[in-house]
Image (cartoon, rainbow, N blue to C red; front, side):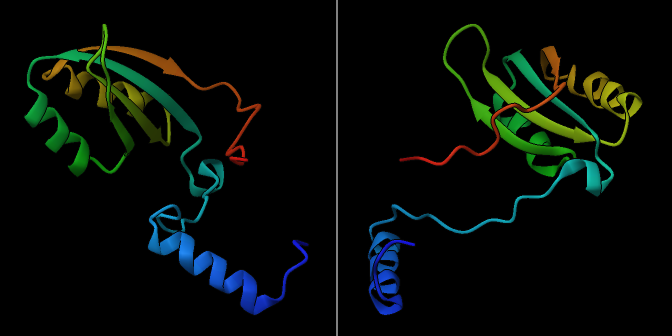
Length: 115
């Protein structure tokens, strides 16, 4: 409880939305219940940036793609139904650059609230 009436809370939320502090609302899907138990984070060093971004936008197993500064150009979050399908994704994506793959074992902190 926040100690405010429903209209007061609604007004505050509306103001946060108008200021783009609240950027939207999303469903949090459990990948294991969605038949996608393998989560991988793949770092890429590549020179074909535009083509790579288009590839990531079109590929159904890519759920996030972040542009980076430093040794790697991109960090891609991939959900697959098996290690074999992850391997296929990695093999296909090598056309755009050299991947370095990290497979998630567990998530001790998930969606920590910003205070």
